[in-house]
Image (cartoon, rainbow, N blue to C red):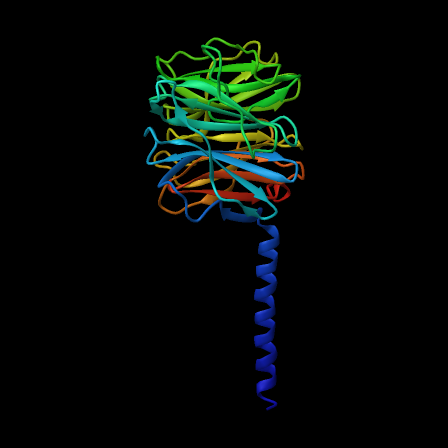
Length: 343
């Protein structure tokens, strides 16, 4: 008995140290939770999620149907109340006055109040010929208005969320009918009237779409773009969007896949992107203090497959909320603690 006592103590110490290590690792990880929005759904494919916060709720919209670009693809919505996402509900489709159905694309949610929310999306046979549409809900996403086409030449936010700056809602947009070109659009009256910049790049030199917008001190704005050049590409404005710099490559890979980012409340900038030259895995989170130098902070997915088209916001409580496509079959929601991300 006496010979075994030190061995028992030693084993207890080993178990205790392992448990302490596990607890410390859990405390240090930025990930607070992860879950799928749904396990089963009435559609085989989904993509291009968007997320917003409405009071105590969160809404997530995405397009879904037989496959991207098929006529039955509509916009679907899930609602998070408490810790559980509700089932997906179809909230928009591309049916035309001629009764022909066209596919819907790239929804973007924008909250105006705790009950009033805008849903931007595109309708059309392809990204080269689609047009911008908006619907409104005044009851936190339970019911929706009839669709309203945006003015000719206006697409609204083409994939990523807008940013409200000086009473203007700034929307990163892009077109694909004459090569890939980005531009900015804005509205000061909740989408009733619009203005826009000319294209900000020459499609013969740069292929850029789907900009995401960051804010910096001194009236400076920055957009990062998906590109055909194999790198994330940036443009800057020093006058609140009136004029923009020429595009420049960042030292971040881009396998021609969607990105999204957000300027956090503490002034840091966060980007969700695929840190690879090809494919759509892994999916990563990077941080920057100046928008130019980025450090890879966290890997959301690292398995073979497609993990793509992220959307990210910071909640009023400070948490980072990310949704993204999981193998075109589900949408995954991950919550991060920004205090555990340290560039």
